[in-house]
Image (cartoon, rainbow, N blue to C red; front, side, top):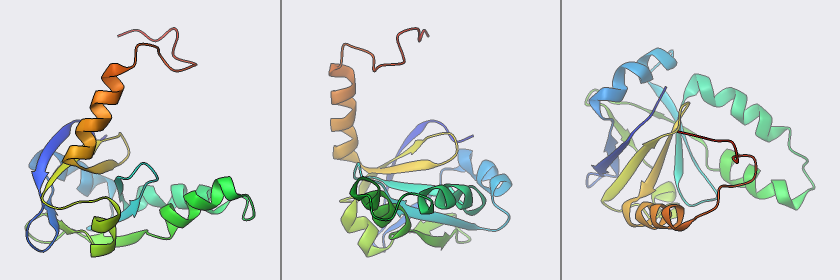
Length: 147
Protein backbone atom coordinates (compact mmCIF):
# COMPACT_ATOMS: atom_id res chain seq x y z
CA UNK A 1 0.00 0.00 0.00
CA UNK A 2 1.27 3.44 -0.92
CA UNK A 3 0.51 6.09 1.65
CA UNK A 4 1.96 9.34 2.84
CA UNK A 5 3.03 12.51 1.09
CA UNK A 6 6.54 13.59 0.12
CA UNK A 7 7.79 16.92 -1.17
CA UNK A 8 10.22 16.17 -4.00
CA UNK A 9 12.11 17.95 -6.74
CA UNK A 10 12.30 17.06 -10.40
CA UNK A 11 15.81 17.17 -11.82
CA UNK A 12 16.73 19.14 -14.95
CA UNK A 13 15.69 16.20 -17.18
CA UNK A 14 12.25 15.87 -15.56
CA UNK A 15 13.07 12.83 -13.41
CA UNK A 16 11.49 12.14 -10.05
CA UNK A 17 13.39 10.08 -7.48
CA UNK A 18 11.21 7.52 -5.68
CA UNK A 19 11.59 7.93 -1.90
CA UNK A 20 13.36 4.99 -0.26
CA UNK A 21 10.36 4.16 1.94
CA UNK A 22 8.30 3.25 -1.15
CA UNK A 23 10.90 1.20 -3.03
CA UNK A 24 10.18 -2.19 -1.45
CA UNK A 25 6.43 -1.84 -2.05
CA UNK A 26 7.01 -0.88 -5.69
CA UNK A 27 9.24 -3.89 -6.23
CA UNK A 28 6.67 -6.23 -4.66
CA UNK A 29 3.77 -4.81 -6.69
CA UNK A 30 5.52 -4.90 -10.04
CA UNK A 31 7.01 -7.94 -11.72
CA UNK A 32 9.49 -5.65 -13.43
CA UNK A 33 10.81 -2.16 -12.91
CA UNK A 34 7.99 -0.82 -15.09
CA UNK A 35 5.38 1.60 -13.90
CA UNK A 36 2.55 3.33 -15.74
CA UNK A 37 2.27 7.09 -15.64
CA UNK A 38 -0.84 8.90 -16.87
CA UNK A 39 -2.92 12.08 -16.50
CA UNK A 40 -5.89 12.67 -14.20
CA UNK A 41 -8.67 15.21 -14.90
CA UNK A 42 -7.91 17.00 -11.61
CA UNK A 43 -4.58 18.15 -13.07
CA UNK A 44 -2.25 15.69 -11.39
CA UNK A 45 -0.51 12.56 -12.66
CA UNK A 46 -1.13 8.98 -11.58
CA UNK A 47 1.73 6.53 -11.09
CA UNK A 48 0.79 2.84 -10.94
CA UNK A 49 2.82 -0.35 -10.74
CA UNK A 50 2.32 -1.92 -14.20
CA UNK A 51 0.51 -4.94 -12.71
CA UNK A 52 -2.05 -2.73 -10.96
CA UNK A 53 -2.67 -0.54 -13.99
CA UNK A 54 -4.05 -3.35 -16.18
CA UNK A 55 -7.40 -3.75 -14.36
CA UNK A 56 -7.87 0.03 -14.23
CA UNK A 57 -7.23 0.33 -17.97
CA UNK A 58 -9.72 -2.48 -18.69
CA UNK A 59 -12.42 -0.73 -16.66
CA UNK A 60 -11.77 2.57 -18.44
CA UNK A 61 -11.86 0.87 -21.85
CA UNK A 62 -15.29 -0.55 -20.99
CA UNK A 63 -16.74 2.97 -20.66
CA UNK A 64 -19.33 3.86 -23.35
CA UNK A 65 -17.51 5.24 -26.39
CA UNK A 66 -20.12 7.76 -27.45
CA UNK A 67 -20.91 9.21 -24.02
CA UNK A 68 -19.07 12.54 -23.67
CA UNK A 69 -19.00 12.23 -19.87
CA UNK A 70 -16.72 9.21 -20.21
CA UNK A 71 -14.71 10.34 -23.22
CA UNK A 72 -12.56 12.77 -21.22
CA UNK A 73 -11.59 9.96 -18.86
CA UNK A 74 -10.57 7.70 -21.73
CA UNK A 75 -8.64 10.47 -23.45
CA UNK A 76 -6.69 11.36 -20.35
CA UNK A 77 -6.26 8.03 -18.60
CA UNK A 78 -5.56 5.87 -21.64
CA UNK A 79 -4.41 8.54 -24.07
CA UNK A 80 -1.62 9.77 -21.81
CA UNK A 81 -0.75 6.37 -20.31
CA UNK A 82 2.75 5.15 -20.89
CA UNK A 83 5.11 2.68 -19.32
CA UNK A 84 8.11 4.17 -17.57
CA UNK A 85 11.07 2.43 -16.05
CA UNK A 86 12.73 2.99 -12.74
CA UNK A 87 16.42 3.50 -13.41
CA UNK A 88 19.30 2.26 -11.23
CA UNK A 89 19.10 5.45 -9.12
CA UNK A 90 15.34 4.93 -8.53
CA UNK A 91 14.35 7.78 -10.84
CA UNK A 92 11.31 7.92 -13.09
CA UNK A 93 11.40 10.11 -16.20
CA UNK A 94 8.21 12.15 -16.65
CA UNK A 95 7.59 13.00 -20.29
CA UNK A 96 7.44 16.66 -21.35
CA UNK A 97 3.77 16.19 -22.32
CA UNK A 98 2.81 14.96 -18.86
CA UNK A 99 4.92 17.61 -17.14
CA UNK A 100 3.13 20.26 -19.21
CA UNK A 101 -0.30 18.74 -18.46
CA UNK A 102 0.27 18.79 -14.69
CA UNK A 103 2.31 22.04 -14.67
CA UNK A 104 5.26 20.22 -13.13
CA UNK A 105 8.44 22.22 -13.02
CA UNK A 106 10.69 21.65 -10.01
CA UNK A 107 8.74 21.32 -6.74
CA UNK A 108 6.28 18.41 -6.74
CA UNK A 109 4.31 16.36 -4.23
CA UNK A 110 4.14 12.57 -4.35
CA UNK A 111 0.94 11.49 -2.57
CA UNK A 112 0.14 7.86 -1.80
CA UNK A 113 -3.36 6.69 -2.69
CA UNK A 114 -3.23 3.04 -1.67
CA UNK A 115 -2.77 1.28 -5.00
CA UNK A 116 -0.97 4.15 -6.72
CA UNK A 117 0.55 7.60 -6.31
CA UNK A 118 -0.58 11.03 -7.38
CA UNK A 119 2.06 13.51 -8.53
CA UNK A 120 1.09 17.16 -8.08
CA UNK A 121 2.59 20.53 -8.79
CA UNK A 122 3.36 21.69 -5.24
CA UNK A 123 1.39 24.95 -5.54
CA UNK A 124 -1.64 23.13 -6.95
CA UNK A 125 -1.41 20.59 -4.11
CA UNK A 126 -1.39 23.41 -1.54
CA UNK A 127 -4.54 24.86 -3.13
CA UNK A 128 -6.19 21.42 -2.96
CA UNK A 129 -5.39 21.24 0.75
CA UNK A 130 -6.79 24.71 1.36
CA UNK A 131 -10.05 23.78 -0.37
CA UNK A 132 -10.28 20.54 1.61
CA UNK A 133 -9.71 22.20 4.97
CA UNK A 134 -12.21 24.98 4.12
CA UNK A 135 -15.01 22.43 3.70
CA UNK A 136 -17.18 22.09 6.77
CA UNK A 137 -19.56 19.42 5.53
CA UNK A 138 -18.70 15.83 4.77
CA UNK A 139 -19.61 14.56 1.30
CA UNK A 140 -22.74 12.38 1.01
CA UNK A 141 -22.07 8.85 2.21
CA UNK A 142 -19.56 9.92 4.87
CA UNK A 143 -22.06 10.97 7.55
CA UNK A 144 -21.09 8.04 9.82
CA UNK A 145 -17.34 8.38 9.21
CA UNK A 146 -15.29 8.75 12.38
CA UNK A 147 -11.58 8.89 13.09
